[in-house]
Image (cartoon, rainbow, N blue to C red; front, side, top):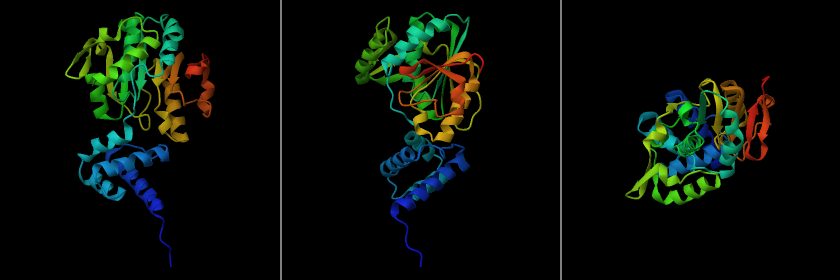
Length: 280
């Protein structure tokens, strides 16, 4: 007689089946995301959406396409803020920008842009450094709802104090209030900041090279991937960067585990900013 599986083992099976269903029906591939993170997010989704089991959530996903945006919201939305980790943006401003000034035109990719906080941070920085007019910014994410929020550029007013302090600590050359208008408890960033931005659906898991970039900023996204998927994403960045282009990652991310790491040299080690080698 076969003994019953512990409930957590059953849940693991349910999660694998749900991720397979999500890929087979909707072509969103989370099968190589870090297990602990996916499990935590699906448990949260199951509880908050009111389903007794992951299998019940899977059934709803398969038979009601309206469930997809809700579930993607749990699986993809990152917690971010403008000029998050100000030292990173100060390093971009003081050490990367002088190199970028030598190019007549620039392409910048904010990969996994979520709701746009990092995108607006980068555009404001480039405006303050006089590079915005020669730059095209590509803002990508797999979550359509997050992309819509990024394109709207509207944030709760109570986040502005933090954004403003981060902007100041990043070496901001103006007042952040120059870039938004506040009303009814929210702030709306100036639409001129989106003049050179291309918003696009793009998956680091399944899609190919985006374009030839001079700077790719992808922060706090790969921490949710397993090692194979991290390696794939780094390969994508390697193939997408121009020679001597720059790659910025999150504070807890690294390239050193990957065979693709040999293509990069440390540029600002403490801020996880790398430069693609000229001979790579």
